[in-house]
Amino acid sequence: MIYTPKEEGEERIKKLQSYFAAKGIDGALIMQNADLFYFAGTVQQSNLYVPSKGLPMLMVKKGLWRARIESAVDCIVPLKSWRDIPSILRANGYLVPKYLGLEMDVLPANLYLGFREIFPGAVFIDVSSAIRRIRALKSEFELAALHRAAKIGERTTQAMPELLAEDTSEIALAGKLEAVARAEGHQGFIRFRLWNNELFYGHLMAGKNAALSSYLQSPTGGAGLSPAFPQGAGFCKIQSGVPILFDYVFISDGYMVDQTRIYAIDYLSDELLQAHRAMLEIQDAITRAAMPGASGDEIYHLAVNMARKLGYEDNFLGYDENRISFVGHGLGLELDEFPFLANGQDAPLEAGMVIAVEPKVIFPNVGTVGIENTFVITKHGAKRITLGSDDVVILRS
Image (cartoon, rainbow, N blue to C red; front, side, top):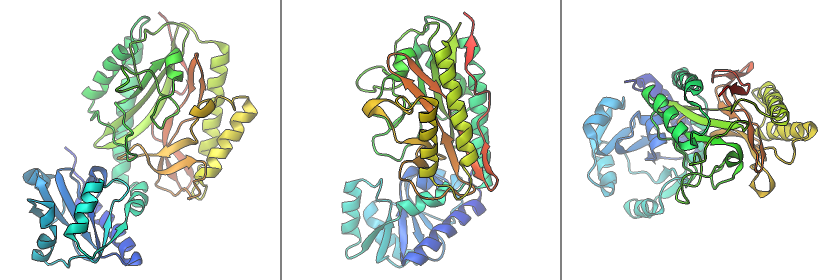
């Protein structure tokens, strides 16, 4: 079991407190699991109070003994009800904040309304963007977890040649590969920040199913198993000569990498192989451009313009109204972290950010080809984390 080191957590808290000092915020309550884990090292049901100065306090409603094992926060106290927070703050020497930060991008409306009653007269300030900006810069401790996740991805993809066979259903193959990943330590659950985005391991889809769009903010969708979860693998049988999309998220100790590989049984048409090579060219161009100071908007338009010149404008990142407007995204504890390589995203890349780059071309009623890899931005440019070959792998039946 790997726990967040005390000095790691303290450094993260200091960054947040520096933001509070600059903005005149007295303190913040952190509740959302990804943020809670980042700053407190635990996701036991709790509320972390971070004052503008001094030590944080973790108030635990459920799982107190586990929180004390998992978290390096010095002050950890029991919490019976959220309504007790002001009195607990006073009892432990904290001033009740007049300017209180909350994660307003994810906080349920009922909790927000409850906090308005608990802290009458307080001014609430959204600190979610500041938290996400802090989290976007990964430490060496976090990068080590991402490299462990990449190893899980490598070992899982290495199992594909033994498991892939004609007439196997997408869902059956997905289950076998997920069993490999699970045995390697994959947590299974994938965290998103965007409301109502959800994913189970990733997308494994063959042929035209991989070209079906869905509600998910992703270039691919898939048939899924039913209208209740209309994305990802379905009951379609995999046949020879069609592109098989293996787009999975691999996770170690909460940290995730995202990668896509393309497979086929026996053969794949020259047109699809050529399209895949074009996506590799775009990936290379993106990673060369992904230097500190470059913006997500610049990189997105670089990719779109390159796809146009290569002849794939109509199918790059989707088709018709289903096209997405990003070619990459940040990731770490969540799959949709800052930064985004997307239209209109002007914030500059910084050394320490981690991005998934995913140029894909989607042909309706045919399938999807393309690539995705995870990179860390260094002062010298993008350095790849995910492992293995990017080429289409053709297996013989």
